[in-house]
Image 1 (spheres, rainbow, N blue to C red):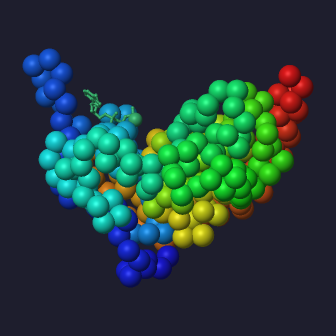
Image 2 (cartoon, rainbow, N blue to C red):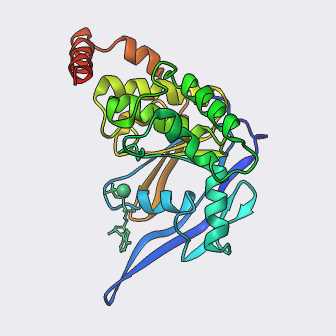
Length: 265
Ligand SMILES: Nc1ncnc2c1ncn2[C@@H]1O[C@H](COP(=O)(O)OP(=O)(O)OP(=O)(O)O)[C@@H](O)[C@H]1O
Ligand SMILES: [Mg+2]
């Protein structure tokens, strides 16, 4: 794969450490993590349970601050910011996708996707709605715009979450086990979507336990005990579309049966 050395750096960590005090003990969750991510990379972050993935993602997402070290997000140093400044930065620069979707219950796809724009005075109500519809169509949900979260399948809910992550045109999309709750077929559909975003030049950081997912991304970072132990570019990115097309037909058939059953409710 070609690495674009001229693409701008959207994420830079310099010797980031994070420790937690638990009673008399100190837990070192991150022990000095440094890396830079350029615009247009699709990075997976892997590591066993307790290796520091979520702690790292919380730093990247401006949900937490390092004990020491620097984090620069799209040219802005995060560590010295106030909580309010961080929240604003997060809202403008980061799109989150979670394992459990985190949609508002009994709320339509459009309303869920409009949410990040509520705090943006540049959008009128009509523009918000139009922007939401545009990204929902982009993720393949043009026919589910008015469906409520409890009227959708897991894969559809995750598509809404991805649309919500995209609607603000963020500098980076952060995904935490975004396929963790989905069956194989639907997981590959999500990977097809992430690869489409990658092809459009979006910057994606995807945290996962699943080493298979790494084969579909452009770069793999491995954590162990709060340190990066491996960081390499993938020169043979597999096609999620191909994998999806080659899944055993039975499995696809079973999935469609399940969807039909779910639709009967
Ligand atoms: N708020 C906290 N207070 C104390 N210790 C914490 C806190 N958050 C994380 N840790 C500790 O930091 C280490 C890294 O935790 P983290 O949640 O980042 O791991 P992880 O790689 O996301 O694991 P998993 O795959 O199980 O989600 C663990 O030893 C954990 O116990
Ligand atoms: Mg975790």
